[in-house]
Image (tube, rainbow, N blue to C red; front, side, top):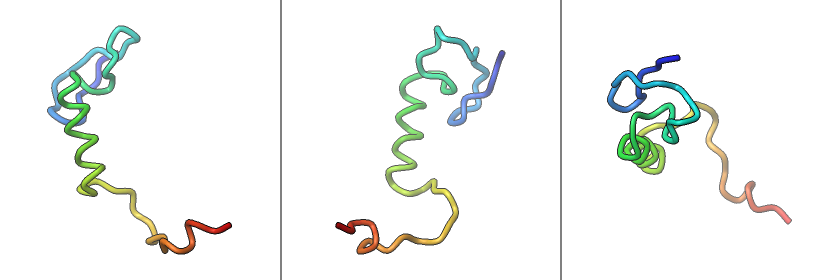
Length: 56
C-alpha cells in the first residue's frame, strides 16, 4: 500500500521494511515530532489543570 508522508507529502510504501512509516524518512519524522513538542499540532479538547494531574 502506498501513502503520502504527513510532512512532505512524498508517496511512500507502507511496509515493515519502512521503519519510519508513515513518514518517508527520519528527517520528516523528527519534523513532525518537533511540531507536536512545540504545540504547533495538538488534539482539540478542554485544557487540563496542572494541579489536577498530580493527585496522590
